[in-house]
Image (tube, rainbow, N blue to C red; front, side, top):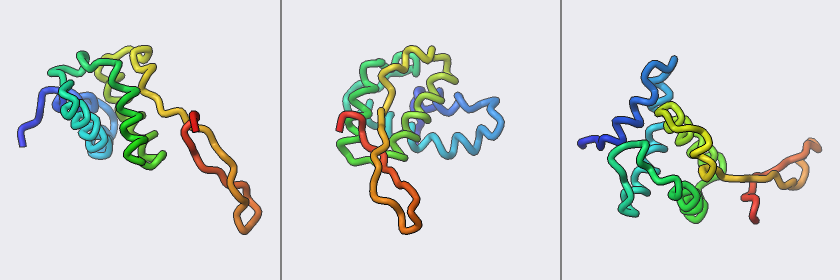
Length: 123
């Protein structure tokens, strides 16, 4: 399958990074989920710098509505931030690319250790 320019740019974000090929292998499937989301909305730009910042919050909501596991969602957000910052984005532009979570205490384990689960901050 032919890679889009934006996908090639995302992959290039790992060039020169120690262990970059391993990181690329782990992170690119997450990027492709985001890219498919943009494409589905008809908002897939040609270049990384043209991604609208306004799409981040709806994307996180989309992942939450699809009941994406919290750990995977947090990894997704981190992966997207890594690609975009390494591609030249200023971190301030990523203010909407967050998945706020809070820890809620659940019953103690059999050994008496405290246990927690993550939930969206607005729940």
